[in-house]
Length: 614
Image 1 (cartoon, rainbow, N blue to C red):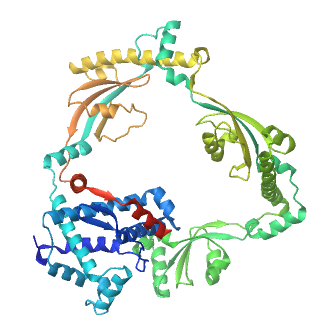
Image 2 (cartoon, one colour; image 1 turned 135 degrees about the horizontal axis):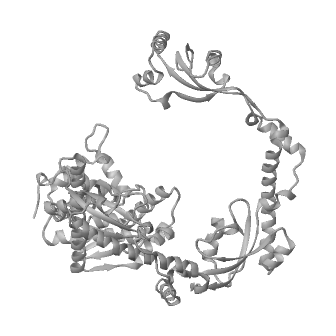
């Protein structure tokens, strides 16, 4: 079945050409030597080695650009890029085979028109340039007939695919249901019952009660897996007091940072620039007549952040310094010169000059230099410790012969404090296995550590006597909730019979227009889901932890379809659903086409392509 160019829309043409030039990316690629012509066949259609080579190189180049470094073929294989490319090509050739089976093709006029519209094949005047066309094909090791046949296949495939996925619309009922779920809101009244509302005291639990509660909730009292770890560690803070810093180094550091310790007088300033001095003077006159500086800035189409100069020194302001530094806080002065033209300056604060003497700065300087030197000491020591560990030294011996400190921890995810506060230690502890030899690792602050796994203690329940207070509290909370639920259900019955919240001594609160994702601070999180299960007028008791919420649904507010945001959401849901159906249809169709046609993969040819990319 042939189709003229009038049957193919320009949209399809440009989709096609985009796909085509992804395949043609990387002009200048070396052709693949060898006798294998294809890496796979689908029915009567082949996936050529050249096509696979081009597509795989293009995918690797794209990924390399994304991560900002070169990606090897071995890394590409580990990421599955090769399998992804092969699957895409097999899918495409499966559709080509199906198009051929049903005699779907396009005429020469369509192919010619597409060639004329490709920018890469056009000369400076925008017309088709045969030299550019031939050059592009030579670089891809393609003849004109091969390329045009490929173009014909691509066009037929696009027509087939478009026919498959076009027109997948869903009934309005589907969209209305989704909108109702996401957009409806509720009005409701609620009151909280807590322990102070109990009509009777809590019973005293027996030993059997506590034992039963402990067993029913054993997961709450079970310790996680713990790792018995011995470690040796040293940080700069551990040895900072032993590091010597000479006076000359301290004074040199003070001189290098004198601009930090000795700050000149500064002003917090805003500057509004004008094109002429007259315009600036006119604006100043208006300010003196009562116009605010903020309003003047807004008139110019600016925001306050646009005119904020931050803290400035005399040197920063050049010729405007004298006027600005003579101004009081809140005063606007000008017109004064600036590098952008005449300007008005507002002084927001005066920052006095600050002078820190060497003696005042000495403790901080000493601490910084000592920490830096401590890090260098540890860096040298780490290499020595690593060598000793490799030679068979134990952590205990390392701690005895160096400044490193020995420690032990029963570590588990969530443990904190001391060395467990370091991310590096937690990550290493999670990966540590019995039998691993200790090695020096970095802590991130200049410190180092080495560790040994002594044993892994599996998750185990804590003895009842060790957690008896927690069990007692848990039992009391459950009893309180159960008693409050009994009271709440009785109150709910009275509300249903016409009593008001106030009649029952409750302090009701009202909420309106709350959606499914609404959150009310300090309120039972189960309340909103419960409200959306109720009908107007329904009253329900919703249990929490040691409390109960009594709630009445007052109204269901439908979605406002006249709201532009709602209509945009409806369209987005419609497009998403249609796209999902189209994707499922295409995947199912492509799979069936391949199953019916039969797919054969030539692994030796694939290996040859991978070797050519090495």
